[in-house]
Structure formats: C-alpha cells, structure tokens
View 1 (tube, rainbow, N blue to C red):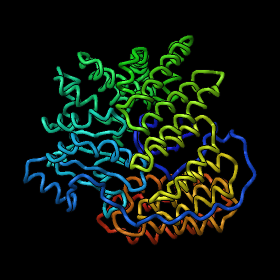
View 2: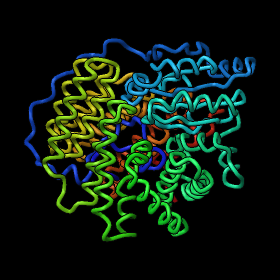
View 3: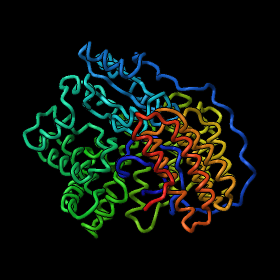
View 4: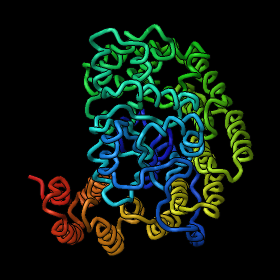
Length: 538
C-alpha cells in the first residue's frame, strides 16, 4: 500500500486512477503512527441528505430505458453505447461530471453514442458490473452494439483529450483487445497507438489476474508506438506499473527495462507532465524497484519527480482535484525516496494550495472532488486534524453526508479515537442509501467493530446480521458486493482465529443460509458466493 490513503479493493493497487471506494478506510501503519488523542464526545448527528435516491447527471441526453433496451437501440441506429457506471456519493464521479461531461466538445461526441448512466444502486447494476468486469466508480465504457468493449475511459486525463478519445472510438469499432493484439504482432497505425495510450487499462477489473501478460502486451505496444512521444510514454508507464505489480520472477526483466524508461520519461519534464495522470498512480512499488536498480539514483529521481508534480499541480489541463493529487504524488515520492521525510515547507505548500483550490471551486460541482483530494493530501502529509476539519465542514452541504462520516471514522481511528470512529461508522451505515451502498458502508462498520471493539460480541453479531440483510434480494450479490462479502468473511475468520467466537460465527452462517434461499436459482454465481460465506474449509 502507498501512504495512508483510502484503501481500494479493485484492479492493481498501483493503478487505480479514479475509483471511489470509501467504505473500507482502515489506517495504515504510517498513518496510525500519528499522535493519539483521548476520546472526545460522541460526534453530532449530521444533517440528512437533501434528497433521496440517485440522480441522473445533468447535461447529457441519457438513454431513458434499460441497458438491454439501449443495446437494442444502438443496433438499430448502428451506434456504439457509452456506459457511465457511477454512484451518487462518489467524488471522482462528481469531478468527472464537473470537468468532462460539462465540456461542449464531449457533449457533441456523445450525441453519436447511445449514452447510458447506471448508478451502482440501480436494480441489476451490480450484475451488469459482473458482465463488463467493472468494480470502481466511475468507470466509463465505450461498447459496440453487440457489447464488445471498445474503450475504458479514465478520469484524471488532460481535459482536452476526452473528445478526441471518443472520436477515435467512433472511427474504429474494433474491440480494444483486438487493437492491442494487432499492435503486439504488427505495425499499429497512429490512431491505434492513440487508442491504446488513452485507454483506461488501470480500470480493467481483470487486470489483477493477468498483470504479467498485460505488462508484456503494453510493453510491445509501447515499442511499436514510438513515433509519438506521448503515446509511447503513456504505454511505457502502464507497462512499468503492471510489470512491477506482477508476481514471480517472469516479469522482472521487463519491470527493470520499463522502470528505466519511466525514469527517462520523468527526466523530460514537459513530456512527463503531459502524462501525469498515469505517472501519479505509480506507488512505492515503483520507487522500490527504481532504488533497487540504481541505489545511488534516488535523489536524481526524486528531484525530477518533484519538478514534474509541481508543474502538473498548476497545469490548467487538469481538474482541481487532479492538481491536488499531483501534490500528493510529490509527497508520496518524498516519503519513499528521502530518508529525512516530508519537510514542513511541502506541508505548508499543500495547505496553501488546498485553500486556493477551495476558493476557486466555491460551491460548484467540482467541490466534491476537490474536498476528497484535499483530505487525501492532508492525510499524506500527516495533518490529520486539518483533514478532519474539512470532512466535518463538508457534511453540512453534502447530498451524501455518509461519505464524509466514513472520512471522519477513518481519521479518528488513525488518531486513536476509537469510540468516535465506531460511532461515525455506525451513523454512516444508517444514513447510507441504496442496496450496494448500504452493504458497502455496513461491511465497513462491522469490520471497524472487529478492529476496534473485538470483545463486543453482541454488537458485532447484531450489526453483521443487519448488514448481511442488505443482500436479501435478487441481483445483489455481484461484483463490488461479492468482493466486500469475501473481505468480511476474511475479517471474521481472522477475528475468530482462536475459536473463541464460534457461537457468533455459527449464528452469522445461519443468517446467511436464510439469505441464500432467497437468491433466484438462475443466479448461480451469487448463490455460490453466498454459500461460501463462513463455510467450513477442508
């Protein structure tokens, strides 16, 4: 894991460029080392959201029917589908809507698609996520009328490239995997290289299962797309990320080669700033690999990295939250490469830039992403109280205050304020809305109890039983929810490693058996996931 940021549970950890996953915020060792404070009074109740239920993002003529109907309409019109999978509470989604879907050039291109917005809490949404291999919010997919994947479009890119990316898809409806395969074995066109370079490889939920293969394919594409410096650099950075993350020794030579290439790219400040959205997701695994290759080159790499991220943090090609994320990447690099740690001058600059960003966005739609980035940056520099103050401040105006309640729980746990942290987790769960969201926040509450109140068996049993009830219904136990159920299973097994809580485990297993009976017979994967929960293992 990187410095103390919100943990995420999809794809390759080094590559999650824009994935909301607010529920499971447990402090890392680095964060937990902050000064503990005595418990305070119970947190005040936050105001309820201004309205219930999800809202369709404004400004786009989203298709009004089901996704099946959208594909039928696309086949009839000979047009591709653009599927935007998001969540009302997701700040990265708000950032995407504020900075990308608001652009006139993007809106014009979307008129040539059948655009569909699918909230993760909509009926059947998690089952569709299983179909298309997505787990993180937001994920934007360009899909052919026959459901072939044409592109994954990530947030955080230079704002001017989104319309161009959509245009490339409109001009060539080949599946993106076919484009990659052709680039590995042949001579890709300039448009092929561009499509590959700006595809959101990090958002592919299957990437974690094939990192070595994907690293090799992207490395080959990078070598064949050398005519354009930016395309080559983006593909090289992706290849390095996947190669570093791959298990085993097979990918080691490739990782070494592409770590060196990334170092060369970072030394070219102008080029590196133009691909900042890919570089910023390189985590301590990359820095460790770089140090192992060139033990005496850490200072040179750090100086170049700091210069790039400083330039990106003031570059208007990126949104407000992304510019703050550049400062966070700088902090992460300093923490990884400088034994002296983060100097106060960097911390002061971060606070100043956060204040400026809030002044610029005001109460505009860009505020949610800015607040999220600011909290992450403040936690990275170790200013937990300032991060907490922003989370409290945002409660008042948020439509989904449970998101910031989870922030407060995360920060209070790092500060050692366990009573407050658990209280926030419970309030966040009770305030959350929608089946997938409630299960996400509910599992976070139960796991928080397991960490911070492990002896309170009755409270754990009551909370876990209620949370499992969120899965009672059709099409609920897929993708994100299935992954969270597996995580909850692992946490409960660890809690009961010595067998001292067997009665609670048996009661929860019985509760889950009741829920399994209500899952339709045709949902075989969901039934299998349900049956595996806390089941005996041979």
